[in-house]
Length: 189
Image 1 (cartoon, rainbow, N blue to C red):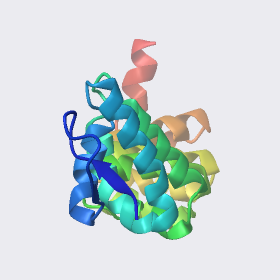
Image 2 (tube, one colour):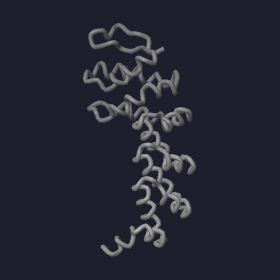
Image 3 (cartoon, rainbow, N blue to C red):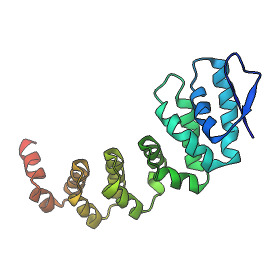
């Protein structure tokens, strides 16, 4: 079992890592003290190998929350790789995570490989508008006019706007004009 450094002054002592300590470990990966940061990163690299899903569940919310800190991008990068190359159950958990930042990272990594049904489910029901719009863009790239037309009934304005734009580019101006979007654009342009 990996060990966690307990602090700058207690670096020789260590405690066995448990799920409740992994959050502290994730915080230490972005610590301002280089020695603490380095040791925490060594330990965290062993965590996914021992239990990938458990480690990801514990590390991900903290890692993606710390991404804007000065040294916070490292762990998010490691977890992005884990989403891409790790076991499928890790990605599945991340796509359904309650944590918005974790879900965004999962969709960012998996967008090109998700089935259309999964993308449409996210467009309809995810509580994060950014995820809805990203998934709608992926659905539109599939190029099926019927599915694109179905996006016009979305509750999300950005999804509807992307659908209208795609339909206009495809020459389907009737549905877009019915929404009042293209006629104004043509008049301005």
